[in-house]
Length: 323
Image 1 (cartoon, rainbow, N blue to C red):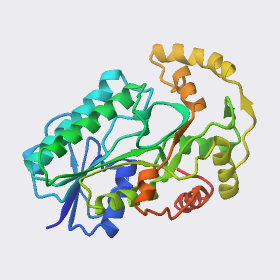
Image 2 (cartoon, helix red, strand yellow; image 1 turned 120 degrees about the vertical axis):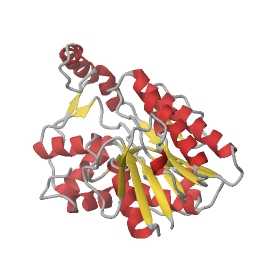
Image 3 (cartoon, rainbow, N blue to C red; image 1 turned 60 degrees about the vertical axis):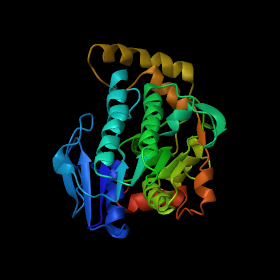
Image 4 (cartoon, rainbow, N blue to C red; image 1 turned 90 degrees about the horizontal axis):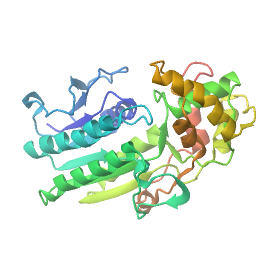
């Protein structure tokens, strides 16, 4: 029996990956391991609830063709520093131990472009990692753990993907919030309009994962995003064209944004969680500019661009609401 495991399979990318593998992966059995139950279960998938900060139980043992390790604590800011390391680093150790115990020959690990750190300069797979957040540092350390697993047996294969912002149905993050604000006509550009936000559609990243594993290389590291480095203004205009959303209402200067965030930070300290603070504002005005050079060199071809992906996302929703 040919089977695969998706760790973090109940999440956004995991759900889309399981759908893709169910259609095109050629697997007889797919197992999802996640700390939470799925919001949108994929038919035919065996869902197992487990916290990967702890060793995998023996009931999950079996002959897996591949493990896709997607599980992560990723929202930043939003967690205490130790939480990133406990899940992202500790989870990598648990996955590696489980894979070794079950003689799994292939792991695909989703890291992050956060390992490069922010900056206006172009980042490629050859750029030196310089993470500035606990999330980015924990992901870089987790990459090292997976490489240690790889070194343990010459027959093993490892793929590491460093995604930029991924969007699509069920994302519930930056693009979903942007779509909602544009639809309501309340969005303003944070600080400037030319901030580069490299991004990629969820349907494309799961295709790239399948493609990367099929290469059969012992180790393959690649960035994932569209080849074009879209600015926040270009992203907003794409939403206008595809969904008929209203244009942004202007540019709000960063000093004014920082001043407006102070009361919300005080509220956060008193337990009134609201998700607004100066650190998150700084993320909005910093560019994330990466190039998927390694993926392009393998012959991978994107089937959509930004407009095409937004049209596909919109077709999966109701009316003009994109969630």
